[in-house]
Amino acid sequence: MRSHWNKQSLCFLASNMQQLILPALLASCWTLCSGADWCYQSQFSCDHPCNGPEKWNHANSNCEGKQQSPINIVTRKTLKDERLTPFKFDNYQQIFRGTIKNNGHSVQVGVPHLSTVSGGGLPTSYKAVQFHLHWGNNGGPGSEHTIDGEQYPMELHIVHMKHHYIDLTTALSDPEGVAVLGFFYEKSNRANRKYEPIINALRSIKNANGNTSLLPVSLAQLIPAEQNLTSYYRYKGSLTTPGCTEAVVWTLFESPIPLSMEQLRAFSELKFHDGNSMVETFRPVQPLNGRQVFRSGGAVILASSALLMATIATALGLSQPN
Ligand SMILES: [Zn+2]
Image 1: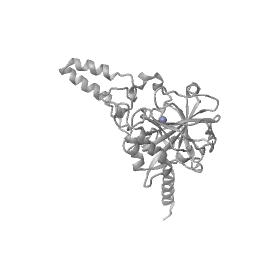
Image 2: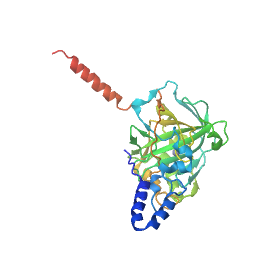
Image 3: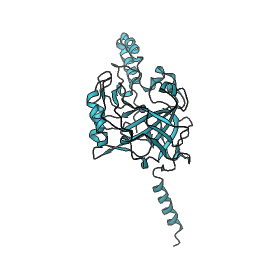
Image 4: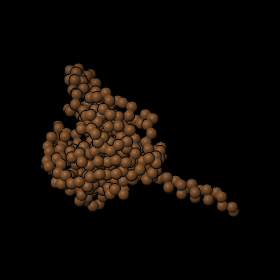
């Protein structure tokens, strides 16, 4: 489970204690603590007082909306929806030479708008725009979405927009303009060779705003095989960074992508703008506010089979006449 330790409150508390000794310190810390830049909780300190997730509404009021992302998915409360059929991936095998960038909050790769996704209960076809990742500290918990409270080490977001839009800004004005495909990672004993182009490029973009060209990759090589993508969750939410626009049709796939510990750790070598390690780049989970999470026909309710077996065993035990 995630710790909701709030560094901003602590800074405020510390500044209040200092107030007793040196009132001027409170004034300076107060000014600093209301800095305009948004940041992740891991970046916040009194020396670097940016707006942490609890204050993202200062950066954009959308961030306190009622349909925010990420969320914790409680599998037993999901509703099976027969319309959530398998996706049709077009040109996901297309090999491209992208640019990978450390944008100060994440690593992001621009994708030529050739790969599209349709089916999967989506209202129309969507084209891929970019992908980026969210991770923890040296392979620790780092995904944005959680499943039954479990936080995975990393999460991939492939951002798509409706095929007829020309840029994300336009797509974000449509409540279903953006479709993000989210994938979880799991620790594996073996290195995932398909990720070598990404992992090797990280060395060249350690500093914020660093970018380099990526060796040829396809989207297909970065995600599980298509036959393993029929189990997924669906809900309506938002971007997970400011402006937090509520224009995203979310899909979270059950099947995780394996990476070795060493590969996961490579992401923690990156730096934020302030030079500190780029770690724990995830927004805390947001309230559902009555939203329903749907699951595809293939998605299983975790632990339900064990529960069923126990129920049957108990029933049999009770009905034995002796
Ligand atoms: Zn993201």
